Each structure stands twice: as C-alpha cells, then as structure tokens.
Image (cartoon, rainbow, N blue to C red; front, side, top):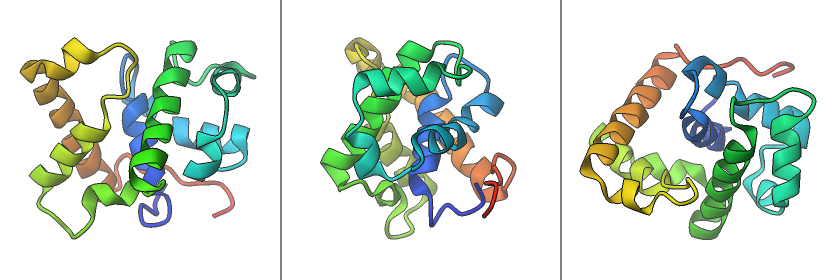
Length: 152
C-alpha cells in the first residue's frame, strides 16, 4: 500500500486490525478486504451487513486470529468514518499537522472496539493506542509497513 493519498482508509483499517495479533498480519487486512469485498470505498463498505463482515473475515481463510471480533471492529470503524467524516480517512492528517495532532485524531477515531468504554477512558490505554498509531504512521511514511497492491 504505497499510496496513502489514494487509500487513506487502508491505513485506518490496518491500524484497527493491529490488535490482538501480529502487525504483519494486520497490514494485510486492507488488501484482503479489498480482494473479498471488491472495494475499499468507505461508503460501499459502510453498507455491508454484520454477516457480510463476518463472512469476509472468515472465508476462505481467516484474516485475523479473532475473525468475529475483528469483523465488528472493522465494521464499526468504517461506519464511523462514513458517518463522521463522509468516508474521508485523510481527515486525520488534514492540513499537515504535527505528528502529535495526527495521533490524537487517530485515537479519537480508533475506539471502535465493541464494549471498550472503560478502556477508552483509561489513560494507560490511550497512551498505548497513541504509541501504536504513531508507530504505524512512521512505518507507513518510511515505507516499512507499506504493502504493494497487485495490479497497481
């Protein structure tokens, strides 16, 4: 995924998938979603049902070690992007802000895990989430975690 300008939502999806599993696998999630849904368009993904999300996270192979939970997390994240920002994931770094601002914006977007109210309120959780988001953004900017999309 070498084109963050063209696929900003892939960065957000990869970050959402980067929990309870290996980062290497998390960065493959946007690619698998595009292969299985046929798109990464946020508006189109927001229309998918919970059953659709579970199906694509499980079949033909799982994209995460907890596919049902990841289906909920990704679906909530996509719906939140659509509802709050008209599907534009690039709002997180709009205006070329300092990295601390990007991390804060991402942490605001990230709490998409079902039932994480107490965790969101925890400053320790926020600090860990901020660190992961900053690391992911640095890796993507440096090209280390970028994925090449077939045919592009």
